Length: 219
Figure 1 (cartoon, one colour):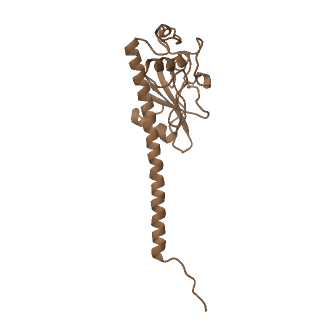
Figure 2 (cartoon, rainbow, N blue to C red):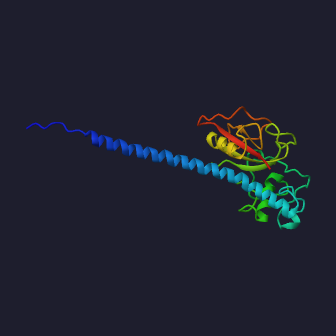
Figure 3 (cartoon, helix red, strand yellow):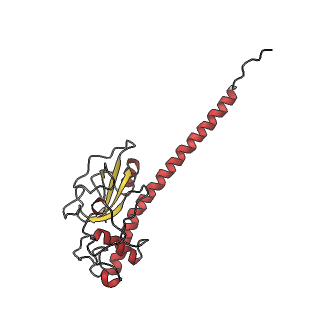
């Protein structure tokens, strides 16, 4: 006895396609929610560091890291030189700040120690915190040598490295004007982790899915 070959009916195929569509839609929606959460976290980093800075300045009438009285305020702390600048680079020359500091550690590392001792930032010691995409967070004055950074930043800036293009563009747009080289939030393309801050921005933002940026915001 011969049996005819059985296959899926149109209704069954339609049901499978609907299920696949729902699964793909759920995955894409989940990815978008994760991206939005990261954007919010990066924005919160900038806002939180700014609030900590102004809180410290209001309480002690000094800049964290540069505070000339930090050593008398807390046992084991090291003081800054009190010249109104946070000397050093946000990434401590690319190596990041060590948790255990010494009197020769740059003020950009003492910054975190002073804020933590004052209770404005969680943790202890001078190590850099990281953003939602594991890029380094840090603070410095200008580009670290007293001149302007990113086409006009001469004062204190907070920088967040390793941001994928979609996140970097969204953060700049939400917090400022969306232009890479203008306003209070500016960026530069990066090709290596936690790069030094350049004197000028590197072209316009380009959302390719592979570009990565470092953003800095004036404090």
